[in-house]
Image (cartoon, rainbow, N blue to C red; front, side, top):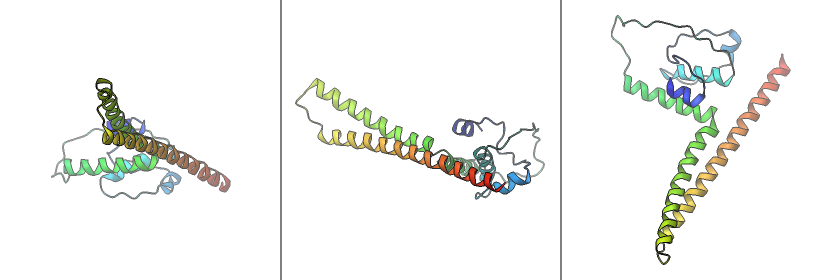
Amino acid sequence: NRIFGMLYGVWLEDILSGYRAFSRRAYSSFDLREKGFGIEAEITAETIKKDLKIIEVPITYRTRSGRSKLKPVRDGIRIGFTIYKLLRTYKPFFYFGLIGALFLLIGLASGAYVVWEWMKTPRVEHTLLTIFTTLMILTGVQIIIFGVLSDLILLLHKEVMGSIKGGRE
């Protein structure tokens, strides 16, 4: 729930309870592909993506009467991977921005080392490290630009789909 909230900016108490109610229109607008425990995360992400209203109803948990089929580590990894895939699809700038920032940080750190060494002893050359620094910085910038373009394409797609749906009604 916390990871989902940080990534999607919507803080919900329990995205995995599986207890949902939808209007017929909302239900028919979903394009769900996940199976198993990942479906709850996908339903929540689709609901947020389509700007549908979310109302949480508090529930209470009781001890299970039978044996649980849940395998916390395996199922937790599956749910985490589902959230990762959905993030890549629904928030491309955030996804690619993180990856690009990582490349940029590596490049800037190695570049700071090269400059520091050069200032101490100007005759010392770090040609390979300088090339590595340049590649990391350029790659990071390109990935961030790719994220911006992907986000713009997603926004344009939403606008086009909204105008098509508006024209039908």
